Image 1 (cartoon, rainbow, N blue to C red):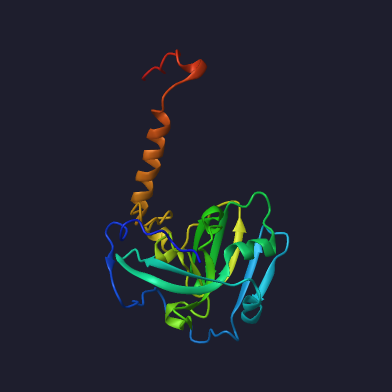
Image 2 (cartoon, helix red, strand yellow):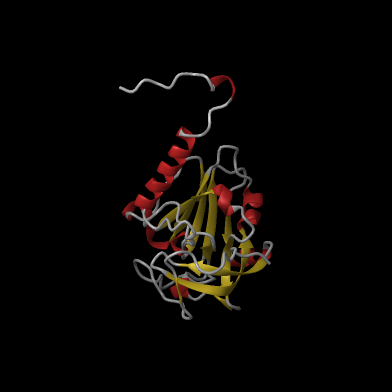
Length: 223
């Protein structure tokens, strides 16, 4: 089993809790059940597919134990999750070479997204069970994403579609000021934190040591 790494405690700014709070915008979909649920996997893929709940259970399954971290500052540790690894979904549909992002499409028009690379980590799954029981509706059941290494809003509730695309499409929370990176260990909670990360990357690139044939070049003029 795989899970998000424990780095000597909780991510910065997080508080450990025992219960599992119910937080979401909108309402719990009243008629979404295993019998009515389906998942459309589409976009730039060779074999688009629509999965029923029964078909989802026929795909390769895994169980992991991991922690979850909400952007509102609570963390719950040691949860047991079951579902289908995202990598199995990827293998099923065979993305095109230009795919860089996955848009998670949910009930009531909610979306979020991530680059495809972190979704291919072994602890990322399309989850149908938590702590030994089917996911209840208030926690995103019958099926939600699970991306343990990101803030929990990236683990989209009431998942109904996965769209594999070249260009990103920031989702409901991201366009309202939440981070598109959503890394709890870097504490990127808000879009301003994303800007800080980008600035650090730019500085690292600007001021990297000069070597090779450019070592003796004159610096650019300041205007």
